Length: 179
Image 1 (cartoon, one colour):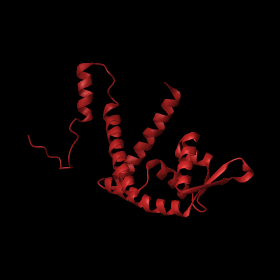
Image 2 (tube, rainbow, N blue to C red; image 1 turned 120 degrees about the vertical axis):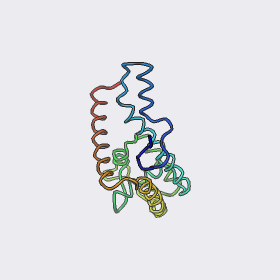
Image 3 (tube, helix red, strand yellow; image 1 turned 45 degrees about the vertical axis):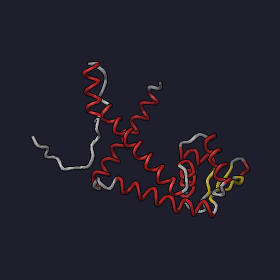
Image 4 (cartoon, rainbow, N blue to C red; image 1 turned 90 degrees about the horizontal axis):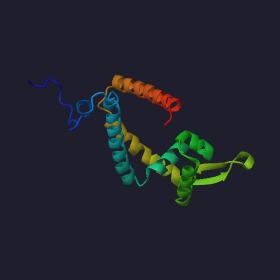
């Protein structure tokens, strides 16, 4: 029998469906309904992360610095946020934010100043930090746009909706059933 599906490029040599079937064969009754969802997500995350890291190395920036500079740049003029707001927007611990800011400040990419009332620290992009994020963001996002370009706009919209729904459900279930 000839496969009538259009050629879509290299397929996974060990698809998630085979992993699920092998577990069912070896351990009947093992819950395998998540494998065909979670395994491709993990594999995609690895592919995207590895590719992003290669792009970032060529651009001369690391992922943590990109994250820091991006969140400040997206805030709009005057490109300044409190460390607390940076943490909220990046979902990174206060300690990690402090380390990132210290490193970026040492590299001349950001500067710290006292916030209103003196109780918080404001972090602002320097001219060098602004220039670096302007160069880097186009390289990273342009590459990622190219990688997902094989999906139609309708497929992308459906995927965005489904990923959002799954993310919300997983967050809810994790809070309801903590480990």
